[in-house]
Image (cartoon, rainbow over all chains, first blue to last red; front, side, top):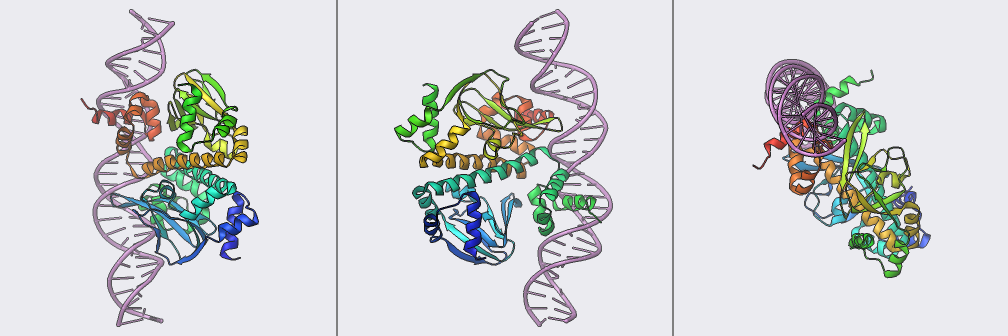
Length: 193
Length: 193
DNA sequence: CGCCGAGTTGAACTGAATCAAGAAACGTGG
DNA sequence: CCACGTTTCTTGATTCAGTTCAACTCGGCG
């Protein structure tokens, strides 16, 4: 499957566009590729794209008092952007780092805005995407509020064991809101040998 | 200003509707009032409304292991709903409790859906509201992830001193993710006598 | 008055952080 | 393809922020 086909599929899961709408939309897309360690966005930049990961994985993090805090990971088949900055047009407070080499489809913000204005269905997809993103954030927030470090690890392990396996202790711990040493200890308790 | 006028103002801050659109929209609204201690939604119910608080205040919380965790507060002039449930149509995991007597404007979900389908501008407002809600959640999540209990209190105090003053220690502490005793101690340190 | 829930204060405890050191994995250049 | 330096992971010892449990204060209200 090509980049565009897998992207189309991801979009159509939200809402299927007409052939003419898709034609118009897809003509504005930009194909790019990145190397592991590259950044899609850095702190201070205003986000100008939504990226679809045809291949690759990303980490969305911010720095406070010199420490990194990971907000989210994204993988093959998912969309990623510094959503806060894209929406507000303020400089991003987060970095998006490539965890591996990646092929992406980039939607320029300016065309996205135009598409929202031109097509009711475009606006609809925008709404559904925003709602979906809201749900992701709320779930994470509720876990941070009500669960202990160990409980958060177990919850994530059950929900997404593949993620837990492939992400480094350093990155995973900063996602769970704990120190690497603590995650290492928690992990030992839950080792399945 | 009447209920509907203040609600219209709140909506138009997102995007102004045409007179005809507003006419159609507002004809579907339901005015209700509640007493302190009433619930807009309880855990287990599917949310069927978005409420605009013309007057009153609410607390959005969930219970885990018998303990209450507060996700959000809403005040006069704001919209409130169990958004997760409204979007997903799954039973709500949260309660919305009235902290004082309230007059509200309720938008029935079924009419909202119809409005989204009928008007491009309706869909747009839906998108902008979802984006706004996303931003609220992300900010809170980032604070929970990177700040200590005391730092979260100070941040909230600076951002919204009025809220800190009028919400009880019990509710405020469960919003900050700490115990009432801890908040009481933190508060003493920051007393401005 | 006297009760009752909310808030405060104190003392002991604990989950997770911090500090420190060693072991394993990684990648880069010779 | 190996050697070396660098980063990541683990483990142990200690510390500390915040919890827990318990007792006391205060203001409102029947």
